[in-house]
Length: 158
Image (cartoon, rainbow, N blue to C red; front, side):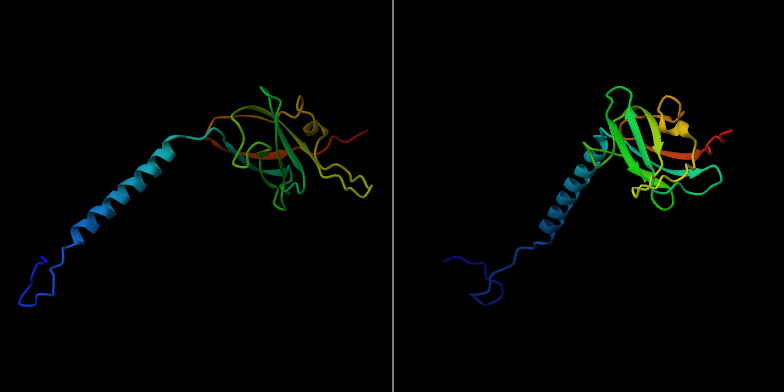
């Protein structure tokens, strides 16, 4: 039986200095992790993000409205609901991480009370029609776009 004897004790074996090996392993793991993070960041994204705030011209938030953006190329829509501060984030039915790049036309639909009561509109009717709303954007892959809206009041009827 062979063993490395240290001192005069035949049962005590020498220990290999494991510190250089542990340091090497730590460095290799660090390089692998850093490479994975860098390569993930370099691949880019095939979607973009659109967030914003919908405010009336007087600065009050448009609460509970639907923001609908329709792709000019595909006709597919991305939607959002405004919160208590008028903020929204568009999402598509295909992805919760954003929306596909492209040109979009936008409409805004005010919350209409589902109780049979039709409240008076607080924004111009043009925002309900993509042809007349004047709200458009172009989104690039990987882009984070902010779309802050200042919406006109309804046109007074005579």
